[in-house]
Length: 392
Image 1 (cartoon, rainbow, N blue to C red):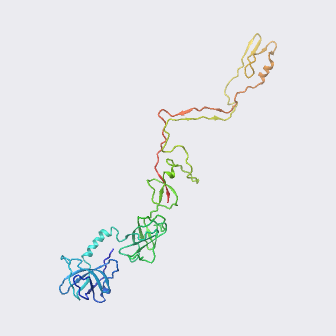
Image 2 (tube, rainbow, N blue to C red; image 1 turned 30 degrees about the vertical axis):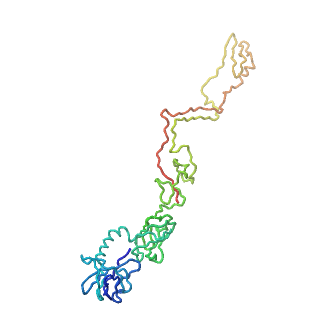
Image 3 (cartoon, rainbow, N blue to C red; image 1 turned 60 degrees about the vertical axis):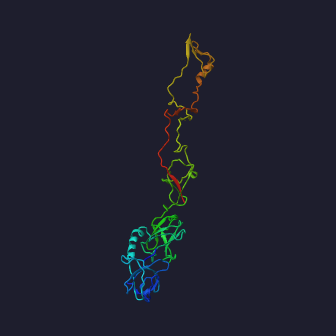
């Protein structure tokens, strides 16, 4: 941006006449270098002067856009004098020329206050290099040097991949200092990849040694490939949201937290996910077997053993039943004191009956459970919808 230039008490006389329409004039020998501002070529800088005709009293304001020694290049009749329209006049050698602040200058101050300062015209510019890790701006006017706490806004032309530098250049792309300054984070550390993003404005503050990036874009110190859960619709900058194809096996799953045993990301267990609870009536059958167990005497329930018998005409009759055979009755003659079938009665007295399975494996039916007539209660816990993202 062009800058209006000033020096104090810059006043001289014309070394030659100045005709109407002429655009160059010469001041008294040596006064150009001694009194009037130097204007860098191509800068657009300027200063304003008053010409005064000593003979006629006519006055004209001109804008000086270049100076070479004592020769001034001027734009004629740039402002009105009082309420009269701006007009070109002829001037003679020896007429007065003075550098003056004018109404145009004071009007420009209001413009700076209301627009240029608010829009940061003096300390904002797009990146000139458009190269990762190397950033530069051209400010207008160009600062003479860096001074804390200088604030500069730069529209980044590339995303950084690590440590980066920044510099201010003049209109000829020449740095205002010998070498670029490092860009650091707020804690003084080196930039991380992605702290500066293409097309985003970075705010830099010079701290006397480096430029501090006040708005780094990298949100955390995570290694590339780190996967995290985010409670938001889209992944943050520097993270890639995993899509259905990446996580099809775990969509709709709940999360189980472990106690730091180093096991994570294992197989999915269970048969139902949050999005598909059971809805139809169904039953749960419980069937099992017990192990071998022989009852002890203390565990045996109270019971009795019956021996069918009868008496007739001096003889007692015993009914022969399994497991002792079914060959007929056994009798005992009271008068003679004899059994009718001694072998069979011996078996009766010596054999120990079996209790059947004697504790072999057997089953205990547990029955079945069926949902009531209102149908089962759907498995529908409350949950948060989240996304999985991987650090770039």
